[in-house]
Image 1 (cartoon, rainbow over the protein chains, first blue to last red):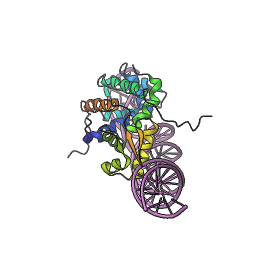
Image 2: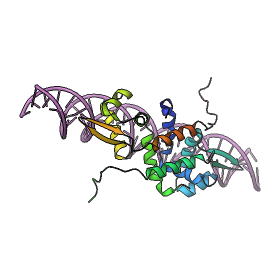
Image 3: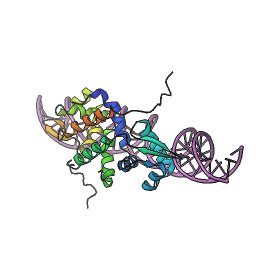
Length: 105
Length: 105
DNA sequence: CCGCCATATGCGTGATCACTTATATGAATA
DNA sequence: TATTCATATAAGTGATCACGCATATGGCGG
């Protein structure tokens, strides 16, 4: 059973994952380590914004920086996160939402 | 691999899970269905606030309401969510945070 | 040392969100 | 039908957050 005492730290992780751009960054990192510039290109976000998100992810330990010459490559600490994300994604597709088709015309 | 096209909907789920009180509510529901009043007692939140959170969770399909007399009981649609949460929690404990002991004396 | 490149940080701002104070719905009872 | 209990909704507010702009750091070539 879930340890409710750990709800706080768990919710902080989920908060990091709740931002679509951050999730895209992590998703892209799954394949291989990427430099900041590479992430900027791939996501279309500003360099400032990417660095901002990377800082949050880094401080939480969700990504790990690797200096290579003048570049900083960011990597996932392990592949487990990708499995968890995939499990979550698969599960969300099984969810049945109640009728809330207010916009349906 | 993660389907990046589904990042949006996945992030919305994580946003719901990123609120500590919502996570506590879900955590409590894992054991058994609970009435709104019961959740209010257990969490110490206001009834208004609990109803507010339950609405978000309900609209996303994360909880399911069951009318029983004058009460409304909320249940998890399945136990899979608890497994996923537990997996996530276990994984977060393996994360190594970088030095960020700015407050350390 | 100076300038250039890659990346990081600080401030300001508009948007989003959690929560509160009233109020509404809906069932059960008298 | 009026009252009471359980729950839901609405509007307002303070806090948090994502992002842009400007600027700082740090390595490398000249």
